[in-house]
Image 1 (spheres, helix red, strand yellow):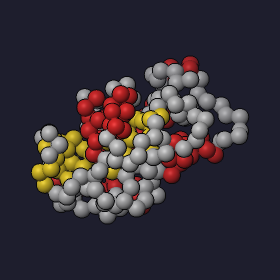
Image 2: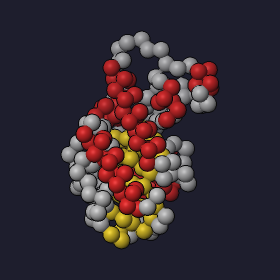
Image 3: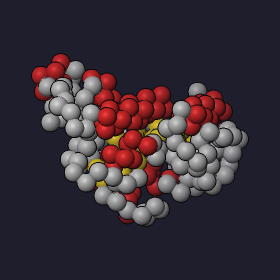
Length: 210
């Protein structure tokens, strides 16, 4: 796939997520690994109004080679790529329900959301919560790096999810599944819930998350 085609797909996915309310304003960012670096959404850009010509093009050292300056949260993406050899794309959103869950005081920091559905278990697995850091704090990259080797998805406290995928399609599908599960989690609060059992998870080829 050419760089131009990849850029068009980033624009298309960005607009789709924006139009469906998965991100708002200039929040959220997307990146894709290329043969010689990365394509990223620019800083202060809306995912609903991206231009393939102005997407940030970075070389393998992270130097900007074309397009506008990259997202200020590029370090989050780089941390995922550094720790995951199979990572081809990273999506970070401030999606409403996932952010709401990230603000709860009594969640399991080692695995924020229980296995409510099979698709969540298969696409996300465990979801650790990373402590709060102020926006732009590069120490957040170290916190992500510490967990990214074992987890392709993390939830940033009072901030939102970061999800890596083996393709852009996989990363988008996983972060959308995470958001829907966060919504279910909040809707089910106060109700007796039937989670998937360890045996059911084993049938899916997923390690027990409980």
